[in-house]
Length: 473
Ligand SMILES: [Fe+2]
Image (tube, rainbow, N blue to C red; front, side, top):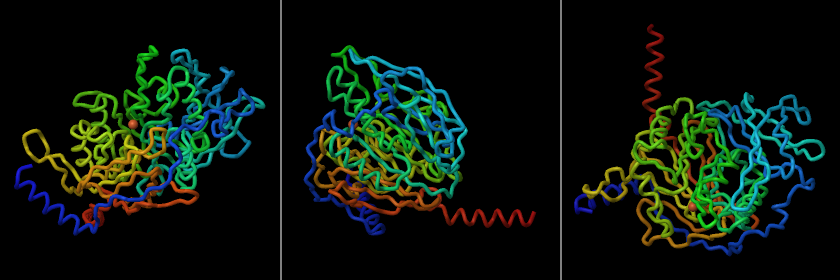
């Protein structure tokens, strides 16, 4: 960096630190963790339902743009016939039904069971639904709650989980998440880690993972984004179609938002507009993902959905030694849009640790400008890495030293986050470290909405002026 910009940067950082009252912090906390090994396949957390033909691996996700539809997915071992879901708002009284579709695939010599996907449309907002899948004695019943109609004042609590896997640490994350009271999981990629296995076990470990998450995923939607462990480019097995198993098993409502790929899409839920990006699909200028995101950002209506949240797998800002700078190419393409459209927060995974940034940007950087260092920028999102679900690869325990100025808090532990939206201006954010037997909120702050909180004074004046104009008319 040239001397003047460096000096300018230091002044801006000092002023920013004084005004915010924050300081960088690297947590020294170390807890004894469970070994980073997958839970054995015969453990009860992967148990197959007693009736061998009963639906298993049940999970749901949002099925449309606004939350009036749900996609129900499940697997049956023998019954390929019924992809029907019966449902209603009263338990045991299923006065609606929907027919889905069945699919199956092979991966090397692994042959999947029958995979069913069924969309329930025209649901009422903010309503509890009971649903039943399977037939006769092997049928199973679950429930879910639809979100409120998208509106600026809706309160809603999201959870954020990433890089989950299927170890005892993963189980700890799930158990702690279940105590959080959150209503929807924003999942930031790397689901099963089945690709750490070989040959037929790559398929079998997707099955165990599906049974593992059912305890939550059958009852509340998981909003999926894909990570590198979903690519499964496995030429040694003759399997070269990227994302083959992920796409067969975990559908997304991509067509409702005019996306041409299930790997990138958007939904509106309660008071949030959530954009899901694919770190492992083309995103440079003029690619389908780039064009779609450009257009989707124009569709965001902060008057209706004040909170703008972006999910991706690879973090754009991270100070961990592991995967350092891997998000740089996407940052160079999309960061300017995030600032222009006042994104509130970007959640990512990939790095197996927790880290939160200040509001910073590096949009003035190019190969000749010399402005190569992120600077405080109130229009920028906060970047949060939550790749700490607990998979078999273990923690990313080596942070870069010294801690960069843009990094607010970092800790190499397992856990999950929650974002509790209270109204159009404020949300309570927590990162909850896994701990033995108790919930530990380790990093907490109030998130001010980038649109409503920042422009509140101007908005009030505008409303007053509007009222006056109407009155005078
Ligand atoms: Fe990853």
